[in-house]
Image 1 (cartoon, rainbow, N blue to C red):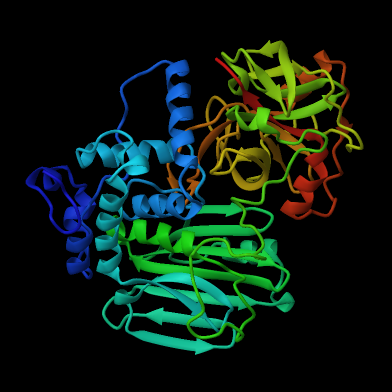
Image 2: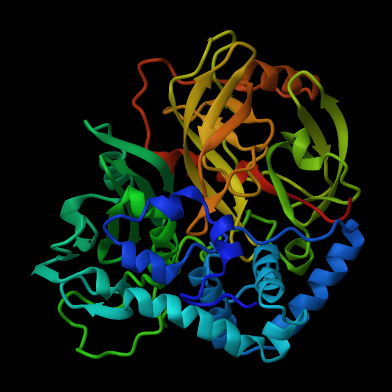
Length: 508
């Protein structure tokens, strides 16, 4: 029996998470309409790496034959059915493949029916019921110049002022606030510092800072909030969506849909004509979001060869043809790529889980010195900055600025941080830009709205890095004195950019 819209079988009720059965209090009718669909794609039967790669390539070919609008519509529909939690950019990857397969299995459709058969209409119809339940509508906000999707049925109040619009409800704590700020309001790192600062009764559960956007989520009493801010030539523009924690089972997918629909620089504040067309995707002339604006390694552009190899880590270029990375980034790999160059492992240290690589043609030209925290300096400061080449939803590399928090354990130190694929080998830096360690592995973590949640990541400390550099004949420079003025996160990572390269694996 098919399960779509508000028709829910007994079996689906039994499988529904506890939060979905008992958590929807103030929005009970809405939760009944949305149901509680599975958030993760169902597992596929175990297959070999070669078989999986062939299947994915065949699926990609069929997918790319679809018009771009249809590809984005499929991903958007899967978001509303709780099967996909990534960016609706039309790009094909494993998460999209798994979500499509899960929908086809649930609806008893033949494999491939969504992409090349009648399944697309079935998918859209099921998603439209979920959208209708909340009255999801694209709006152009004249006060901020932003475009966004709004769950209109949740709100019955609207307040507007220059640079700010707030939609709210007289019945529940749910609200959607859009805001715009100019140069006087500070840059993105300054906003991020304010947004993540400690406050009574407010707990930040996730934070991410990229060069052109930031995300902060958390709980404030019985309310959950999701904030996304973008930086552009006209300053900062962002939104905050707030909803009751008890309604999270229904509202998490709405949050993802809102985040995917957000177009921060659709027009000038007050200059968007009423009824302007809205598609929810990236518009011509709009600065690319962090998921789309990938920085490339100097002298090692991501070509088709790199794009076909999964990103596995980040490497520190320590000299011509030499690099240091986490062993986890290259373990079991038969075709290691450092940028676009073929690399081999020349040494591995079991104690630190770090490895040295050799790659002809790789040269950190015009790179600054390698600076390490002083030997035997003990545990690093609590707040750290991570520099990592991570994968965007299309699998392309982008240099990321990631906040981290040092955590001491009995055996070793760890860093609590939200790492996308490619985080193994990331540099952990203090506020002067010195290396206090290297992320020696990567802990898997769930993602919300296309970004990974924070998890404890293993850290090889500066002394371990120093020992491996000595084995390679590299002498690092002394770190700045304790009284040196701290730098901003973006400036710190920019200083290391020429010494970092993405690591990928062509075959295992």
